Image (tube, rainbow, N blue to C red):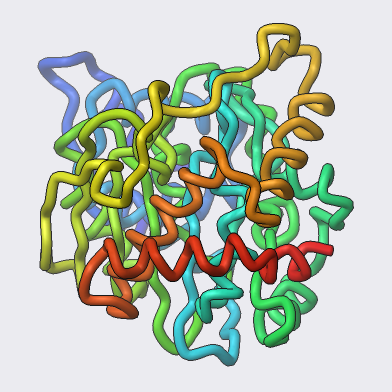
Length: 355
């Protein structure tokens, strides 16, 4: 492999030549270039050109795979001593229209016997939305706990879940946040940072949301290359993992990167009947100026749902938890899983995993 300066120069010459003349690069080149960016060997201008040019021409599978390899390598995922670990890969740029129900999914899944890790960061383009970090902070939890402490929480049968911040588990990637914010638009990092998997169990299951129909097989192949055992792709609200509570959705279950089940899903399968697809932000709160208040609002709804309080948040937890329980073969029927999830929520047992 040529030295970094020559490599980046060569890559930019090929990928930034316009829609008709730009050329793809090899997996090894993509990995080497991303590693150089992460290690601070490439200046901000060339780093931005690299990321934007790839996005403009559309990244290939080889390019995605190479960049993901670089991200996983610099992260060095740590092993947690649990049989099954659920990895929730919600969008790091957050939510700017709806309340993220998935913030309270980890303690619920832990109570259902599935240790869970959820990860993210404070704020990043393009949405600069409400994130899991904000809501964990509103819960009174430390969003900056170490990987070691997160691992201990997950291995502790009385807790069984943890949030992990990108600033902790991958400082090299997190240092690119200011540059990404200047770029404004999505880059390949937005796609791949949810697939790193900073903690791994004996079997690790990636749960991801998607918007565009071509993405599931791409995500499945990438999670497989990153070392996940299975992946569940759900067409969720705002690109997250929780489906619409009002209309039909879709999910695809993969094992070892191979599609096992592709199905249309409907909330009525689980006796969920809502007039709205998700919980909208209150009209009095603005995502740009009221993130702390929005996080407090989301926290109150989540704590209420874990205490058995019926409503959209409760139904959202029932829906997504049931799909995950089915995906990891805890139940043969999603409807049966939903019955158990409701029993746990109604008992209020999961709330002790937060407090």
